[in-house]
Image (cartoon, rainbow, N blue to C red; front, side, top):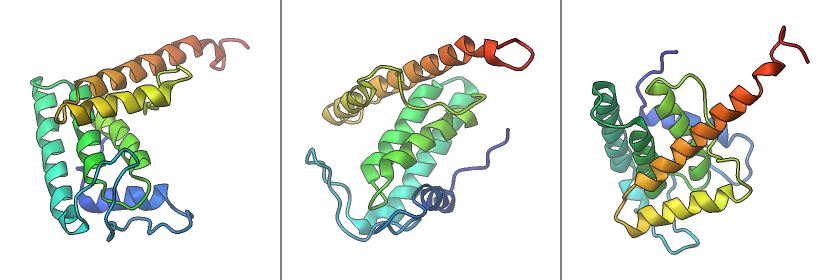
Length: 173
């Protein structure tokens, strides 16, 4: 599968598709209002989103080249893209969904054969995910735990895939 370079327009289109039909959401449009999280994180002012998006995507393309050369692990690359995008918070709503989709995009761009859901199969998966994000916040953007979580989710997905191979046609029911 060939995936084109990620552009600001492509990110806006992804958001538009993800948020299509959601009430009160300007799907595919950068936010124009201040944004903050329930944990107190204050995101950049709306006037910085255009430049911030360019920087995030330039960083991603640089990291992608490093992955291709073997100088960077693809899970670190995907974690950086997620974290930089979520900290920019370019849209009023749907940033988390978009960032999870971007993790899959980044991993597929680096050669993964199929999308991976960011769930480690544990009933407290969402709490685990939030913990690794808080760790990155508390440690100046250190995404190593987020990368480890992404790897754990990929491992879980592959385990499920292998466990369910016997359901394939011709293999019996």
